[in-house]
Image (spheres, one colour):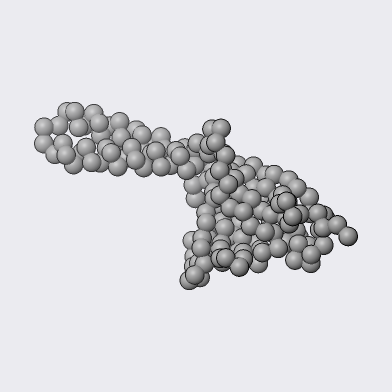
Length: 179
């Protein structure tokens, strides 16, 4: 029986935090170097801006936001997998796919994920709270509108539950469908 629930994705390592602090430290050092230098100020200034930009990118993508993976039902009773991003008080729906549209759910190691080639014509969406995680889930779905791969970070139990819900949804027997 498909039940509604929500899972919060947690970062599995501190790579993003370390990269952010390192980039900010290098940016601070380059600002000091910029102020002390007489020559090559333009180059050092560009490097400083690049370091600050990279730090802000890592902060906004990995540190400032939280990801939630929800299994819910729409107004017609169709089970859905919804990926949400929460940044401060702002919530954004990133993905919304029917659970019956899920073709496969596979667990991958870092090496398998890097070696994977997304087929031509398939969209790839990556919603990871961790910079370079050890394990990810690749959800392959196909709807009348698009073929997609969604990469998330979740537990083995979540993977098994999603597979079971997908099989149940494909059979057409789930709560929300009354006699």
